[in-house]
Length: 231
Image 1 (cartoon, rainbow, N blue to C red):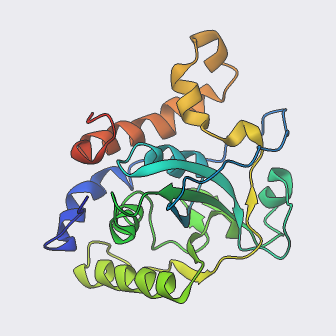
Image 2: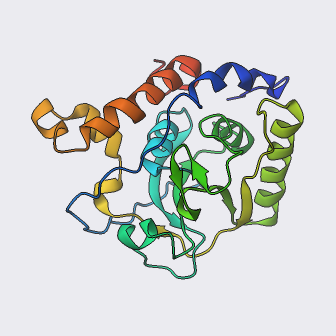
C-alpha cells in the first residue's frame, strides 16, 4: 500500500479534517481491569505513535489494510506499569500511545507514518486541541536505529512539503516503559459504534459522537482505498 508515492503534498487533501475536531479528554470509566496481552502474528512489526487521545488514533489505524490490530497504552515515562489515572495527572512523563501491529509485506511503515502526520496536529507542543500536558504530546517511539531514521525521514518530508503552517514538534525518541492501557480503553470507539443506544449513553456518548465520530467518518472518506472494508 503506497500512500503519497509521488509527493507528500497529497496529504494536504486529508488535512481538512484534522484541525476541525478538537480532542477533549473523556471522563474515566469505572473499570480498571488490565488488558490481556495480545499475541503478535509471526512476521509482524510494531509502530508506536502518540497524538492526543488514544481512542482516536487507535480506531483510525485499526481500519487500514495491512494492520493486524492497534493497542492503546502509555509510553515514554519514568516507569512501567502506570495507570490511566496516573498518566492523566501529567506527572509520569508518559504519552497516551498506540501500538500499531502491522504486516510489513502489505503496508510500509513509512506510509503509516505519513498517515500519522495527517490525523493529528504535529505542530502543537504538549497539546492536542484544548488538551494540554505531556500526556497529549505528538511522539513517535522507536525500537531501533532504522526505525528512528525512518521517522526522521518522514517527519522531514512532511515538513519540507509545508502542509502544516507551523513547525512540526513531534518527539522522536527510543521506546521506554511501554504499558498496555486498561481493558476498557481497547477498541473503545469500535465497541461504541456496535453498542445499542442504551449502552452508548454509558460510554461517553457526547465525546464519541462530537469528537471521534466526525474524525473517523472523514478518515474513511479520505482513505477509502486504504481501508480493510473499502469503505
